[in-house]
Image (cartoon, rainbow, N blue to C red; front, side):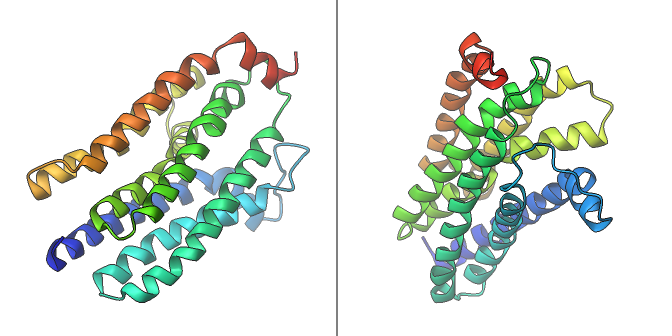
Length: 238
């Protein structure tokens, strides 16, 4: 990969990272950021020890996701590499705290689709994808084209939760429709990779095809399980 192409990709990734940060802030503003600023934050579950660590990990990774491509665009590869260890720590904290936050919501009522269906996708898709793609990106760090695309997927793995919050707080969409629309909206961000490849490079990178295939595979497996009696029984404690 040439230096000019690497810089263009880094700039594209930085734009997407800024979009993700803006979405994250907007999604967590009504229920988390504003209540904390007003001194009125009330955790939505009794087991809340993971709430703040999860928020710190999420916002920290979003900020790092902007910093890292900026360093590449400026040619500061050494600092980019060292900052990768901070990313690894934030991903580990995000995954562990994410499991803790979601399990802290259980058992929940049978009508709580956000934590029954949404919880299945968070525990069985978003968090495993984040960890898996980050590990793949690290292992392929010597191959920039693969590395940044898998890092993109690690960052956008949990965007479904953010999208759901945006639909909930900023649209008149009923709850039952929100659940149906999160998946396609999440898929749109995955499709950004092959579409941008084609538009900017004239061909689709193999990593983009793999990313799309992995996302679809997770959806195909998790979706039916999220509505199964086994999962609903676990989530509701019945």
